Amino acid sequence: MNYYGQEKNTATYNLTRMNLLLHGVRPEKMSIKNGDTLAQDWPEDPERPNEGVQFDAVVMNPPYSIKNWNRAGLKASDPRFEIAGILPPDSKGDFAFLLHGLYHLSTEGTMAIVLPHGVLFRGAAEGEIRKRLIEKNQIDAVIGLPSNLFTNTGIPVCIIILKKNRGLQKPVLFIDASKNFIKVGKQNALQEKDIAKIVDIYQNQIEEKGYSHLATRQELIQNDYNMNIPRYIESIDEEIPHDVDGHLYGGIPEKNIQDLKVLNLAVKEVLEEALIQKRPGYLELTLTTEEFSEKVLSNPAVQEKSAKVKKVVEEYIQNYWNKLHQLTPETNTRILKAAMLEEIKKQLESFEHIDIYEGYQIIAEIWTKTLTHDAELIEQLGFYKAGRTREPNMVTKGKNKEKIQDGWNGAIIPNNLIAEECYKEEQLEIDGLRSRISEIESQLSELVENAKVEDSEENNALFDVLKKNEDGDPQDSFDGKLVKAGLKEAEKNSEEYHYLKQVDDLTKEKSSINKSIKEKEQELKEKVSNRIENLTDEEVDRLLYKKWFGSVVEKALSLVEMPLKKEISIIEELNKRYSHTLDDIDEEIASLEKELEALMNELVVL
Image 1 (cartoon, rainbow, N blue to C red):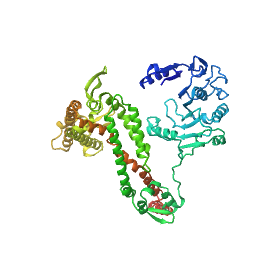
Image 2 (image 1 turned 90 degrees about the vertical axis):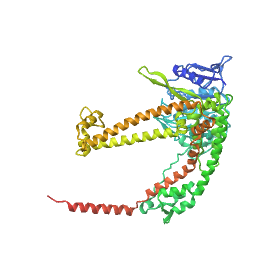
Image 3 (image 1 turned 180 degrees about the vertical axis):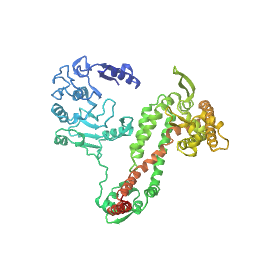
Image 4 (image 1 turned 45 degrees about the vertical axis):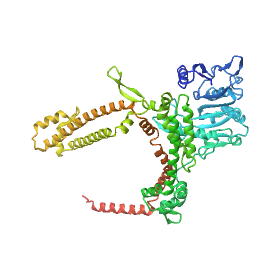
């Protein structure tokens, strides 16, 4: 496979080449040019200068709505723009980039370009270009993405997929993935599950209410060739409408309970036992939310489903656990990863109401956090040798920030995991000492706070030995020197001596324990460093299994409970919403009026 590209910004151009190298693309396989894509068409075939080189895949993320893009004075007769018969407006270069990429796309190829949403609905020249593309049926899909995905702009963008060989009657797929993201710092980010869902919906041409829609040519024409996503996908409002009678007279509307599909299908009998009729069409919850939740999750049908999911997931893990043991330099870990991710979806899709993409995310995170790195090392060294390989732990010390070695780290087995599993007693002892440090700090903090309270016993005894700032305000710790000086001056059996001695003893104990922790941690660190190369095959198996798959079954079982808990929380919300009726409010008002009247009567007029 050969890679071609052009980038105007020199820094980005250099980063592009570096990025390709890091992804395993050899220099002879890449042809990247530093230049203006629009002003000077490239690449061209020297033997056919009037025909652009055709590519099987075109991917573009151009600058959005760039102004004055046509400084070269290009005409509509430029081969790249002939398909539209009109030049994009000079004030916005979005369609100029799109048409450039489409021109270089082969008949059987696929193109994807990231652009602002304006290209979907702006009129004038852009509207005419969009009309031409729709008439030629070359727009394959429109995918709306969340806002704030990129560091250079906070606007929401979309991916437009184009093909030249689409059937005339094939619909255009619209996907609204704008609500599927997580916050990472100040940016929004797509998770692996979000990307997987987009890919599956696109590849399988699936319609899903509120998420995707297959728009026919007739629909596009009826919308005057406007491709704004909300015209084709109506957002789902999950807010449950308020019921006036429910607020006036109390009771959960029965129709709201009937809408809870998961609970009605999974544990209908529990639902019927927990909710009794208050009056026609309205129900009352007879249990607390906690009691109801416990009955639902402990129901035999739910437990049976959980057991089946557990069995399927354990077998799935065992299958790929065996394959990970067999990794060699000839193995393609990318194929293994893809197979592993695809398999978890297939295994979970047979279970009703389980979100297969949540299961996908569980496995994807294992690869992202650990397996991608670990698998590469296992390929090179073999499973058990990689498990027993250690690397120097380099730390920066001193004013010159010199890097020096401070012990060893397991190459794929973390030191803290070895400590937890192979040196449990030593780890428990250290944890116990840390727990005692927390207790001491809590006791000292309490003494500090009490010492700040005027006229308290602690204030009289300890205020003078608190650390003070420049203005003489007490701080949140004691001054060790002042404590020792105070002890020498105080009478031995006095209250002051008692408190000063308590502070001094706690401080000494804390110092002694901290010293002990440091020594024991160093001893444990040396034991772990030496243990890495001497781990048995059984220990390597146990440690790596826990690292990669230790929490997978538990997380998979939570997928069974997730939809149930979601609907339980809806019942809790509805129960709170309709718990106070109009009569209750009237009674509360009457009670408050009586209290106010009583207070008024107690007032004395001077």
